[in-house]
Image (cartoon, rainbow, N blue to C red; front, side):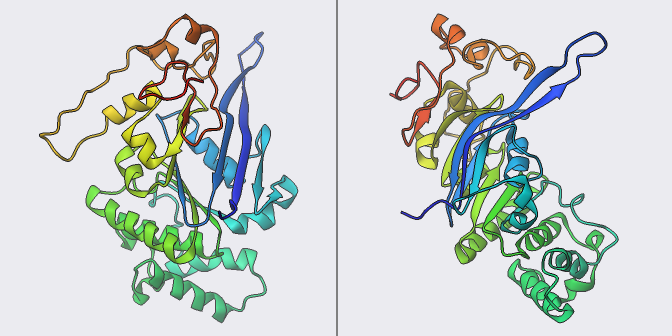
Length: 323
């Protein structure tokens, strides 16, 4: 089996939140003990509600922020802050908003050449231009687009430019933070198909951040479900969508729209409010909203085991192994 290009072990990111005058600061655990492997040519999707820690995890992987604890390895070598400048060439990110991620005062050609100017000073101007034009064609844009400004493009075209910019340094890992959520539904499929095609051509490892499970079903090979900074279920795409173990995963899937209006599906409505990340309850964090919760769930915190498909749950669905 191919070795993973990136491995994260017990990854955590905490923030100190001021409690105000005469109060001690509190700790917000945005990411709490997440493990995963990224493989060439494969996509790992991270899903969950807003505020579950998906985007914080993306910032840790792209070396925008340093983890509070845990470790990341890239090609078997530890990722440490002293090496970030050189390692960022291998890990790039595509942001959610194609309108805000591109400099409106720069032409497309300049936007694409900028990563090479910063990270590849040995390249000549002619080489940078040639590479930028080649990348423009690779993402499905025309040669005349090279001299235009971002405001002259549609949302889908701008996201293609952002993808091209991310690929200019020939990365091994591409982090996609909600890459199609800001696009019209008719445009989403073309951008997703482009990402699939680029992955096959370049053997890229994708970390795909999304809240849209219908999109995840289309692109993912493996899935991690997060809740309040913790991974509550891990498994292959087929395992997660066909037979979810964790009640939270089952509730998320029940809220996903179906293309067939005649297909009946049980809609699970979660009761109660999402707990504050500053006051996560003792035991299982999902227990206050879970219809299967028992006394054990409110006292002890379940953890993921080492099985290929596992859930942090004492009373899993579909015959899953209890934590």
